[in-house]
Length: 91
Image (cartoon, rainbow, N blue to C red; front, side, top):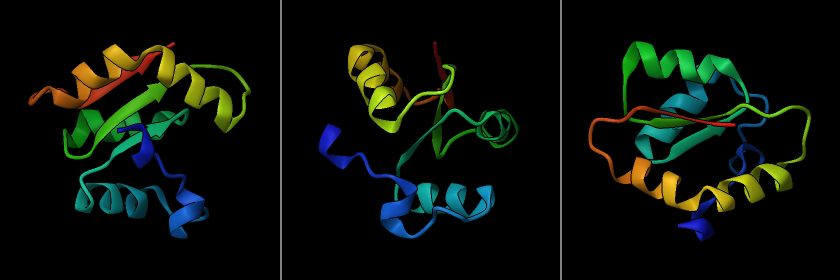
């Protein structure tokens, strides 16, 4: 699972609109991890796929977000496996 983590920059979507990122993640069966509340709103409106993990932390690096996800691995894996879940909030 963790080997599959990619940043939007890696796939050329660093400056893409949220809708483009959303469709890319949906098409590739990915989970969006974001500190941006816009994706959580999309999860409420449209449901999954894609699933969204909303990370509620202050200013931090991508590496720190990765470390948080690793600490919360069990919760993330349960969320990923859940058929009906669209949004996971991690603080």
